Length: 81
Image (cartoon, rainbow, N blue to C red; front, side, top):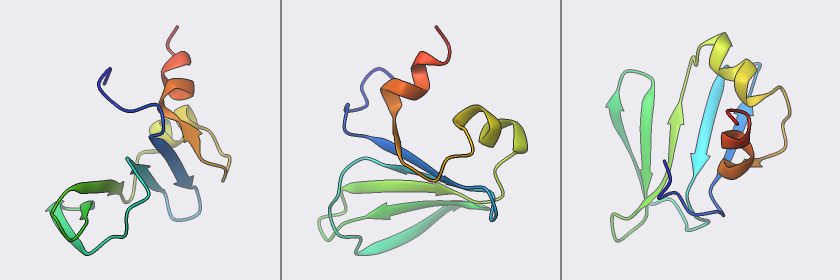
């Protein structure tokens, strides 16, 4: 995970148990299902924009936090220090 850009953000929606990792702010042109409940967003050049995990485990959501404000990957990784 060390190659993630500092601008990468993680947002959660606790009500829907959804977690979204945004790698940039480009417009999403297409969403591809990678696995059940895991979706990859790509732009018009097929560059990755973000990934969404639906029905995330309560443990994962608790680790990220119950805030609706995006957090940086750096902040998330600091939880493991």
